[in-house]
Structure formats: C-alpha cells, structure tokens
Image 1 (cartoon, rainbow, N blue to C red):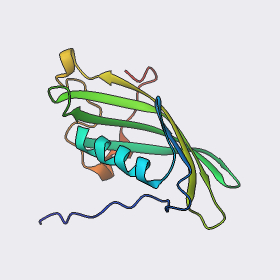
Image 2: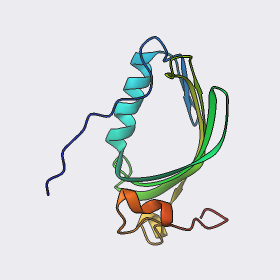
Image 3: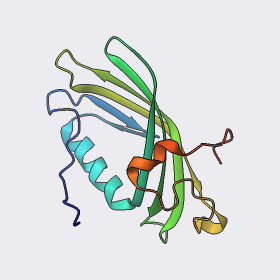
Image 4: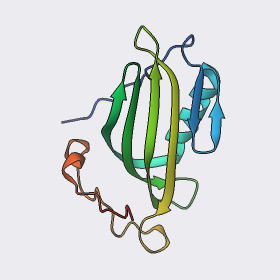
Amino acid sequence: MAATAQRLVPPFTKATAHEKRNRSHFFVGHTSIRQFLQQKWAREKSYMLRKELFTFQDDKIAVQFWYEYQDSMDAMKWKRCYGIEHWTFDAAGKMEKRMMSGNDVLIGEDGNGEGKWFQGLNADEVDGVVIPAGHS
C-alpha cells in the first residue's frame, strides 16, 4: 500500500501564532514559526516521536516527549531529543503559545544509532516502548 503524503497543519493561525520557543530559539509570528518548522523538518530525517500527556488545566497542556531522528546537517548521525512542551490555547482552541525544553543526545557511538528505542517500529507502536529512567 502506497503512503499518501499529507500536509501538516499546525494548531495555530496567523492571528494566534504569538509566541513559540524551541530550545534556545524564540519565535513570534506566523512567518518565523513557519520558517523554523521548515528548517526543522529539513534537518530531522527518519523522525519517530512519542508524546504523553503530562498535565492539563483550563487552557494549558503539558506533554512529555521523546523522539529520534537522523540529523541531515550532521552526517546523518542518529540523535534523540526528549523533554517537556507547554501549550496555551485561545478561546477558539488555537495554540497561542508553545514552549519546548529538550535535550539532544547522540544515539550510539558517534551517532551510529545503536541503542535506538524505536528501532524497527511504526509510529503507532512507539507507545509500547519502555523509556529508561535515565533517558539515555
């Protein structure tokens, strides 16, 4: 069965895209957020993500995440990122603010991918992976 490419649409509009933080990068406005996402998607190949709801209250949600990818800007080395994201939504349910704190680490010796958590899994199988306490 051939996979059909889908256009990913973020949960914000030009009017609600007020503030976004990703690691040490801060963005304000739709155009800068879009440019950031295009660069991120160009860099992070073979991307496999797992997210879990951490907490929520009123218009705020926090999720814990783990993902693995090959870095196209670093000789396709395997890397892992994990951390916490905080989202705030407006009254219409559109994202107003996103803050992400994460750590990138090499997977395996010199990023060879040895020890990947999501090795050989499909995206719908990652929830069953036991993430080690040390996240290494």
